[in-house]
Length: 181
Image 1 (cartoon, helix red, strand yellow):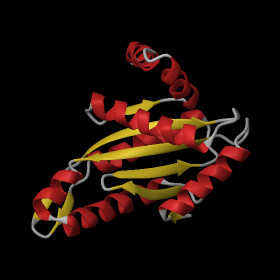
Image 2 (cartoon, rainbow, N blue to C red):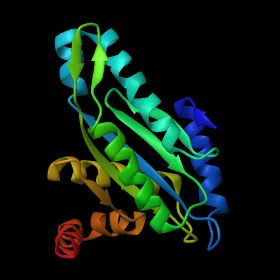
Image 3 (cartoon, rainbow, N blue to C red):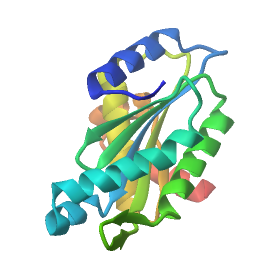
């Protein structure tokens, strides 16, 4: 399907949450384009929009036919990867990161390189609310950005719900992820 507007993206995510199961696993990704705000500040919104379009053009070939891409805010893209195993999801996230971090983006006579920090939320057969998944991907993206260096960070919606009740849980999750790296 490719590029969709934000409302359609959230509607399709809601449908994906309802149909996720053992044989239909999906993932929501939030890709923070580190440096896009600086382009806006120094070269204006037209330049930032042109660079964002180039980023989208780089990502689209890496997506499958049913996957979706949208702009979440000024410097973030959202991706909905559908019908993949968890291994395929992580592999695709890595391919997307490589496509962006290795590219030189152009506007007029300038060349830009952006950092890419990705929050990833697996969508499996556990019942989830749209608000929980959105909160989880935002938390994952913030953590990836905090870590920097073109990081991909995975958070499960259950972790975010528990962290509201147990504030140290996200810290424990980060420590566990770092030990596995």
